[in-house]
Amino acid sequence: MSDTKITPADLEAILKLVESAEHLGDFHLKYGDLELRVSRHAPPPERHAPSEAAALPPTPPVAHAPPPPRVEDAPPGRKAPSGVPPGMAAVKAPMVGTFYRAPSPGAPAFVDVGDRVQADSVVCIIEVMKLMNTIHAETAGIVREIRVENSQPVEFGQVLLVIEPE
Amino acid sequence: MTASRSIRRLLIANRGEIALRILRACRELGIETIAACSEADRDSLPVRLADRAVCIGKAPSSQSYLNIDALVGTAVAFGADAIHPGYGFLAEKPAFAERCARENVTFVGPTAEMIALMGDKIAAKRAARDAGVPTTPGSEGAVANRDEIVEIAKRIGYPLLLKASAGGGGRGMRIVPRAEDLERLLTEAMAEAQVAFGDPSVYVERYLTNVRHIEVQVLGDGERVIHFGERDCSSQRRNQKLVEEAPSPVLDAKMRARICEAAVALCRRVHYTSAGTVEFILDQESREFYFMEMNTRIQVEHPVTEMITGVDLVKEQLRIASGEPLAIRQQDVRLEGHAIECRINAEDHLSGFAPCPGRVAHFRAPGGPGVRVDSHLEAGYDVPPFYDSLLAKVICWGRDRDEALSRMRRALGEMQVEGVRTTVPFHLELLAHERFRAGDVNTRFVHDVLGF
Image (cartoon, rainbow over all chains, first blue to last red; front, side, top):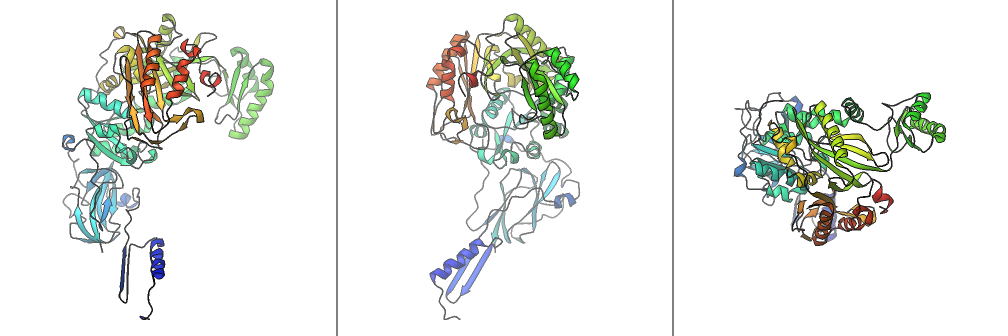
């Protein structure tokens, strides 16, 4: 077996296969001297209010509304910081709302920096009009950054967490 | 009406030139602004000028400017105490006003109930009749009985319009030119209505062809209602207004007073609160006017009225929403000079007014005496394909109509938009037409005479 050589054509065929596979995040191939690692992290798919939200207790995670942010602090017309380091995966807000790190006030946070998460791990909640939307990691890996403070409002597409895929 | 609820921070739930217009009014009143924007509008002028911008969703309006949850959710999460809906999008959706009320966010507009009332054509017409405002001669509702229809037809005269009650798409619709055509066309209309909508009943209305579109600007605080004269919006194409002017070239003082008083009577009867516009058609044959509908929002063409009255209607609308009573009295409202507005759209008038999205490479705005430009346009702006094509409103004021028209021709000559086609050439053609210059147009003029 190991005396068979992988030709450039073979490589191309493998890459094509990886590319066409819908649910493939990472691909790792070791064959003789050749080591091939393909990491493909598409931005998280668009999500609507997930149905689990309905199953959550109806009480909001905090008893009192967070104080509104001081508008003056924000530079005019600023864009949401959207840059993530290469190779990292971003968890972006699929909707505008209020970001919560824990299921209820005083409860431990869903995740902290350094935690290992699975694609289906809940990493935070975004509350819109008292409707709680659980947000999943979508990528298995290590949480490297949490970019939003608890109970702060977030806009659509804003980067919430940065995950290093593994 | 609740007591004073002053607005400190306002969410602008709209885009383009009207978002900028609202922002300017807020800034003059010391109100902080949050611009809600879609992904497509992140770099637009109102978004950059706002105190804060919040992206609320993707470019298609169904996922952004029409998303009630996202907009009201943004107001709540970012601490806005009011929402201005602008025009279009959610401005006249009762559910939006209702949701705002439920979340304790001031909706800059009338109540959900008022929006619903005026949004229901039959209920609105009934309200107008109850207020003594003339409505188009015709049946009070849909009629299924043939003999009854013949009776009504005899009373209101010809030509007539028959319209299926469930209506739409021109099916079950017939124009009856003379009495001898009624039998045949009524049979057709009722049969078509039955097949298309499962209901043979039809409305009967006087069919008016030589009409002008006249509308009256009002402000109401729930107690008092005042008017700001009329606007004449007869230059239209497929019910889309192209040019608006004030005052109307065809109303004398007596007629103006009658139409404006009719608008006020309707608003007073329903205790209208906010800025609004009562639309009428004026039949140029009989010189009679009839109520058409009421718009419960600030309108695109409001600057025309601002130019001849000197009143900032958006600021007044915000003051009313804050619970302040009207500070202006009717006798303070003076109509001075003449104003005209041309809507500059990113459209190719030679290709059926097809929208022309794309990048604006260069923009030169007109200026000088009596010229106002309300626009979010700037060089490098990408006209997105997702929304309406209004790029700019050029409004010119003159001491009289002739001066206003000369200024408009001069201003449009100065204006330059490179990269996308605009309706500027169309407007120059319209302005040059002898009949337009004489004020001799009706709502079919652009189609029948100019051929568009």
